[in-house]
Image: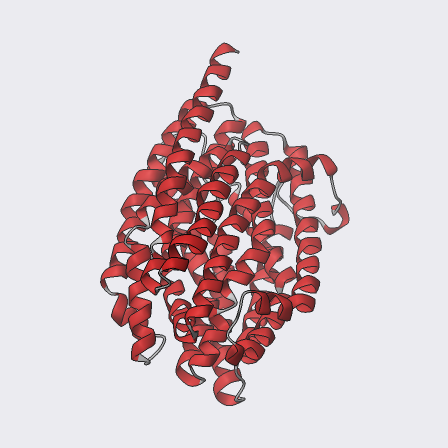
Length: 450
């Protein structure tokens, strides 16, 4: 076993979850720093309209990427299942099929995003004064989506055996390149949103190239061999059974956020700019939370492949406790220091004020999502990905849409819009918790009867 691998099937659990989750959280935060660097530089050196143009794209990009990010989760779970069950031939097929999905899916999104960028941004009522800049930013970013997908799928493959460190190394290198290129394009060449978008794409090339290098030079069944690159339909279906519902779950969240973004856009570009600032901290807190949930998914996936349901339950308990300790603490700290943290990205007092309001309305209640994500991840690990997707579709998407067009429409204030987040989390978490106990009790009974 390589130093970067983790033995998920035996021994203690809590320390191994930390060993897995912390590099993954840092990696995700570094990835978000691509956008944070964009936000900080345009906010400080270009202006709040450029800041709003970048912010207007956040939910759109997430919506378009989430299906394929869900498929990368499917690749992670399926490869973890094969590892736990020691089905190494299927594992090799999973690696090569995953890379093909990444390239094909990324190419499709790149073409779609470039062609329909204006239509999408007009549909969500992007403020007219920032529309042209937002279109340019989105079109350039979409060109780099195939590169981003290679990194995401390649990282998912490495995570299936517990390796979260090498994806972190790739992201650190790309993050450094991104910041340097941002400064060069904006300060030296006088570019605007086009410069920061181009910097993000070029830096993504670095992270994708490093991940491919790791996979090509990997030993054992996870090795990527170009001459063996082929598409396996059965493996694709196994990935899709987990990944499509996971992607739909992410898209449901993003679609509901698009509806919220439309309401936000109608409040004015200052609120859009404030959201662009606040999202950096919301994403950071969520990425920590999601890293522990992903650790739970992968650990459960391997142990489910090894048919050890009792250890799966122990993994879920440790995932939640560690998540509350780390992600919960980070969320509270962001809430407490919301004002100075917002000042990093902008000097506009009105934008800062709105950013502080959003951070405190959302991150104070982020701990609720820990239960929702941890239980969802555990169910994906045992190939019950449809249940949490259904719960999110109803508890998040449907509820938020109804809320926006009823409660918010009656009193369209920023505060009234923000409260929809914690309320929808509470409703969804109640349903997902019940689903988790149903699924795991059922699996325990099935294994006991064998």
